[in-house]
Length: 435
Ligand code: KE4
Image (cartoon, rainbow, N blue to C red; front, side):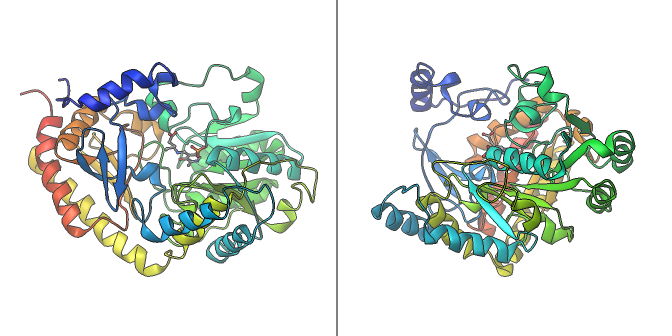
């Protein structure tokens, strides 16, 4: 049964116009709404937990710029900081105090980081982390997990999650076969499978890169012992453990997933919340590894706008709010959302499995635990599309793709959560499809 998609005349007009100049009318594939159908709604403003689209409709937003907006839209401290920084100049291509302040704050929150390098996107962070791991170990192979997503660098685009999964690509065109020869693919939460790959190739593996909480196949938590096992097997074989915390950093706790699960990686990638919507990401780790990066060492990485003053200002303003009380409040609201959606699905007679870590909420239209990408792929994607539009019509904006994460922000109130659950009770009946 097709979803009941409301007309959105201004967005429809803008989308037709956009398609004449932007590839697919968008600047990132998942924004095109291909997975859920219909026209992407063009957003004109956001404030707190809400966004408003070109047709002047307001939504409770659980996409949160794909996880960047921990504090909600247009947080006054972030806006003021960016506005003041802009008045002093938008970029200097030179050292500034703001980047030192942010690096010190990041190190304080993530103690495994001795040295940090700011870049402009999560892709740059993960690509650079893998390069320095290869440079440090003098090995070529990396091991990643099916359904994980680490950005669009060639070496990662094999059986990836997020937008790649949404378009059903096993891998991207334009990636030379040779680029993938050194990428080993394992199954998330399958520690024995990882150990087997290490038994076969361990001496040639530079690094394991993992989302410590998978957020790009829906939300799949690490099973007890999984992260600890990755830590041990990488140490046993002289490989590095890279935590891709672009989503989980400052999201699942002040110290990210490594703080929550008490597993210390060798390298960490950060993004999203780090810039609170401004384009900034980072990679960093143990001093002896990071000192291989230019200008100190032979691993080259650079960037015109790295450490951009506006992005640093946004990050400094946002991370001043990162403290335990914030996560206690997030936990209460996110737990209420999980319970409310679960109960509403039971009442509607719909198979919906909600998997959650902190304010990361995964919605799977199926009735079994999701431990890995194969499990996730079994979800009823059409039901997700019907649910997505049922919620849109009731003023709730979820991620417009099933292999993603819904995010509760600090701006969502308990009343917002209750309103969301009420909307879901009705949207789930529609998601059920059929009579
Ligand atoms: P960016 O290059 O998109 O800034 O970051 C890449 C990246 C790296 N690592 C993780 C764990 C990520 O989730 C991402 C990007 N996340 C997706 C959403 N799941 C970005 C949305 C999009 O592609 O438009």
